[in-house]
Length: 319
Image 1 (tube, helix red, strand yellow):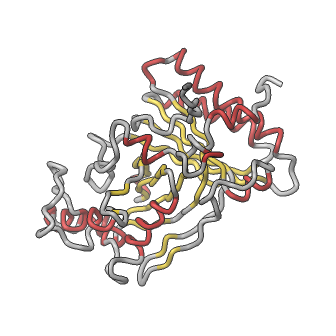
Image 2 (cartoon, rainbow, N blue to C red):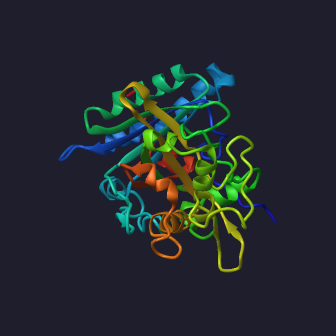
Image 3 (cartoon, rainbow, N blue to C red):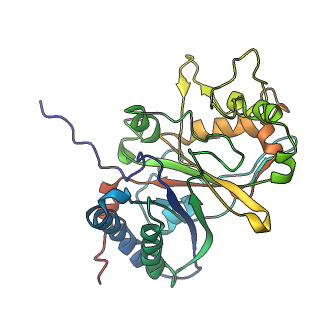
């Protein structure tokens, strides 16, 4: 019996790189966007292949994801992926996960920022006549994978085969197998407030020891710490995970530093439940203490189709 052919995914499960550019685009009104999108489908494959050959040690990757309104506007397959929709604000007693627009999201990674720069230049050449750039964030690896807050970010990421298990759509939505739900938020940090805390107080906010990155025991870790509320189990007690590829960014002289939160998951409901725990709290009102120092300024949901699906819409990028 022949084995079913698995669709080729985009480079979603690649390991976090040293340099990243995140870009959100919004289509202009009353513009023919389908030809540009078809060129982009071919360009994504072209960029990934070209830089793998040209700069093999750069671990370059380009991932394109599509928002709900763009999916409809581009006349992509119906029904849409089961959990793709416009993200709506999630308001807790003190903090809100805001919702912001976005039609296309690009996630560009490389050890060398030159590669990210050239990939974005090529993408912009295709998009600027028909779309406006809403966000362009240049992320970088900070020391041993820490956020600007000084704690290691992404410690709980799945590893090995679990990266595919938790990040990629499987048999639960066969039409979109190999794709992934992408949720992003741009957080700005209140560094003046954060640095007034002692190391011990910061550790209680995060739920981990700062130097070692070891999680606090449950009998010591506060129940409103980030590690307590950002973890999630299903009804059977099995841990649910998302694949984060967060990166710090900022302009220190302007006191504008933050974290670009980016989560890939096989279902958006997993990510949403984590957001509920953080912003609403468990119980309600017992919100994630990190939100007192990190404010979400954007929030958008996208779907990153498989490469096989992008290939179906590919146009000659040289035309």
